[in-house]
Structures are given as C-alpha cells and as structure tokens.
Image (tube, rainbow, N blue to C red; front, side, top):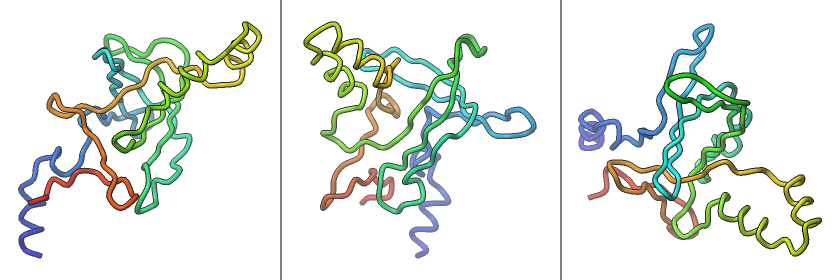
Length: 156
C-alpha cells in the first residue's frame, strides 16, 4: 500500500493518465470547458472547444471505452470559428479501425450517385479523426482477456 501511495504522490500527470491533448478552461459562468486537440493520420492538428457535454455513455463503467460526446466548436488562433460540431472522445483498443476510416469505407462502397447521396444524408460527416499522442508516441490501449485496458504507469 505504501508503495502505491508513493508512486501516486511522485507521479507526473502523464503517468497518472491525464491526457495532454485536453486542456481545461474556465468557461462562461465558471463552467469548465475543454480545448481538445485532434491529430489526424497525416499529423495535422485541429483544436476544438467544448460547449456542452452531450453524452457520457459507458463513462461510469469499470470496463469500457469511457466515451464522452461533446458539442464543440473549432478554435483557430485562440478564437472559436464556424458552426458547432459533435466531438466524440473514447478509448479504442489496438488493432481496431477508427470510426473515421469505417465511415470512409462505407461512403466508398456506394455503387451509384443515388447511393452516395443516401449515405451522405444518412450518416455522420467526419471532419477529422485521430489518435492521442503522448511525447511523440501513439497512446494505445490493449486487449487483455477480451477487455480493453490502458497502459499502466505503475507496471513493473
């Protein structure tokens, strides 16, 4: 027990599992907002500021993706721009395709212009998607006995 307490006391935020791509801000009327940086497969980074929490599905579960869904707006040069969008934050196990790639494959499967229009009108439009990088390394979860878990900063 003492070993655990010492490790927690002297661990830095990254070792404790804090996500460096999420920055808390004081919003209107003291409410907390977050600037969330999304890094695409090509290395481009986009920042979105949360406006409202829409869903916390699975957040209270011990095992799961810890999914949060936000209403957010893009940030450029410190200022919000454009229309609100939906931003989904979740853990994705290693080896799993990202939703953005899945949606792209679905859209590419359209055989006719009518199919393409139906898919565009019926599915989400993905503006960007990506993984979290910590100190230049992709932060991943792995599967252990069928359940996704995050890397432990306390592993020996």
